[in-house]
Length: 134
Image (cartoon, rainbow, N blue to C red; front, side):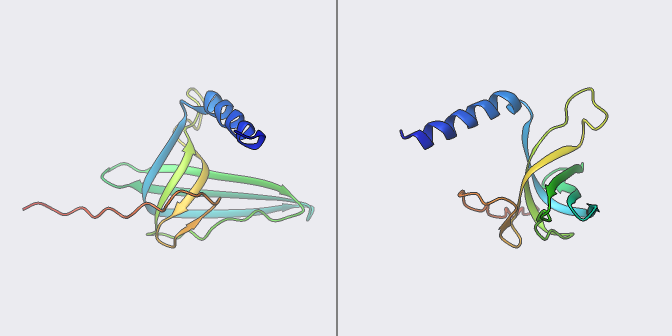
């Protein structure tokens, strides 16, 4: 194992130790997307995206937010529209806080358009078709 691999393993272990109980995924159809961009003195850019998702095989809905702040350069966000099937990789909210039911998005995989917010080596999930029984 080289130095680079040891460093990656160290960071991955510490991340899992810190956020391990809060890591979650949600797979389903997008019901609503709202993207807000804001500039402060043409230097500081803020991007806030709110996505409401209906998980497959469930009647409830999931609300999630993505926040990005960057100096000088505008943060990027992938095209997500209503009806797309996506896989959200996120953190659950902290218990006891006011937005504990809102997921904090870390990555989005849009399986309809085959795009990722942050590139991952894993293959895209295949869409599961559910048939109604007679």
